[in-house]
Length: 114
Length: 115
Image (cartoon, rainbow over all chains, first blue to last red; front, side, top):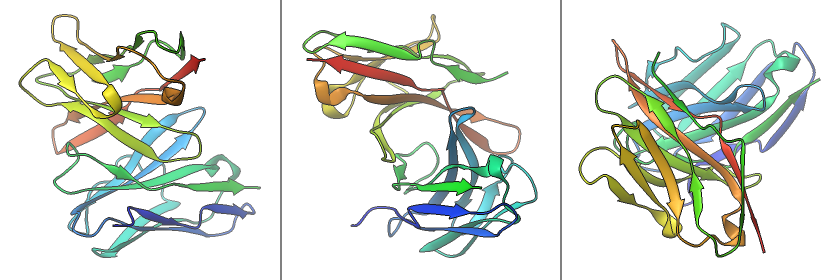
């Protein structure tokens, strides 16, 4: 298996633009997680899905952030409009059995909002 | 409040010496504890976890961790460090909440192993 795939690997955009980050989990994994990593706040869980259904989105910073999982092999994290403080590395991870099972992380998307 | 803490921002150790990375937790009930490692410009990789059972947990790359309930600690250890162990290490805990649960990471500890 290719592991968790994220695209793009790097994204540079201007404030106010819409940004869409993409994730393909490992085939057969029922859980998908979105994380954000910054120097100031460390690694934060934003939202996670079970069988394509959002389970806990309490970590989503504000309404500008939204995440979807239209099918078992694809998820998006969208920021609209983007702000400089959204600059971070965004990781997607997946697991087979749940949050306490081993999570496999993608390589991350480094987002820079100018 | 339920949480996990890594008291050291950085640990420096010479190659061949024992390595310890500290983690303490504050969780109601029985904790689920994890260690992950992050190499530069990479995603996190799972090392080991404690759910229940034996307090000494063995994981990947020769690492192990000891769950100590009385001291509320879950320190990561390796008997003989390698230069390639230089990375950022995260302790994490699964927090039970009223509704579902939440995965929380510590701030991370940078490990530097010198030749």
